[in-house]
Amino acid sequence: MSKGFSGLWTRSLLAFPDGRRDETTKVKWLQGPRLFADLRQPTGRPACCLTQGPERLSHEASQWLASQSGFAGVFSFQDGIAEWRREIDFQPRAALPDAGRLEWRGRVLVETGLHVPYLEHWHAGEEPHAPSFGLRLRSASDGRLAILVRSGPLFMLARDRAPGIALSGPDLLTCLAGAADPAAMRAILDCEISSGHVEPGWVIGHSTLPWREGKALCLSLHGESHFNLDGTPWEILHAEGDLSFT
Image (cartoon, rainbow, N blue to C red; front, side, top):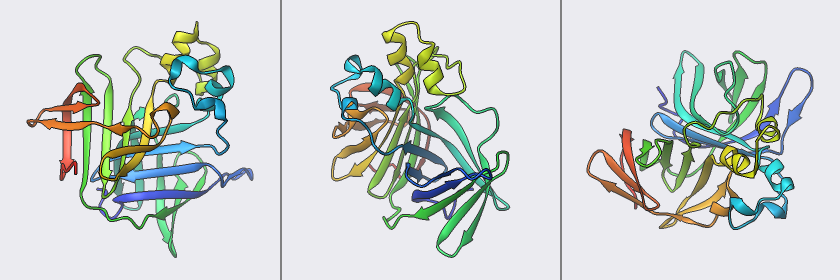
């Protein structure tokens, strides 16, 4: 169940028992009825990342893009324990489940790691939660997976890499270092996690792919099983909530 967690959450603290702390990474978790998406971006993005497309990425830009993280999938909460089951992940998949104990301390939602020792502080947004929906999609052209979540005026889109792109390494920087050529590097980085506002128009504000920022999503529903995203057809694998696109 995800009742009570719908909407936008931001993180102010990540702390580990050895004293390491992160209070600067920009973290957004958008929760729908069950599906969710999460985007985590370090501060200080270099200007070289703001290219017109992946073909013009420099080595410095590729390295910074690989330092991002984010994921999307299904959220569950029972008996004080939350799990974020990742179906799309910008970084290589972790060996252990993403699960933690959640408890309120005043106005701060505190997450304590279940399988890995860490502590996170989360804060609920003030935006309205309706309409709220989630879509799990599969590309008709190459079979890649996408998850679209809306909560009130906010949305997040996660679009996986093309099938067959294997990430062999503990992190994306290692994967890039082992890429055979620039085309392989671009394929490794081609995982989109974007957040934005319905203004009207679904406009992307932040993205793991900077050239997507400022762009508007083109969305349309075709019956109960087909969806059009930016001019390409997708099959609806799962739909939940109130499917409102206005």
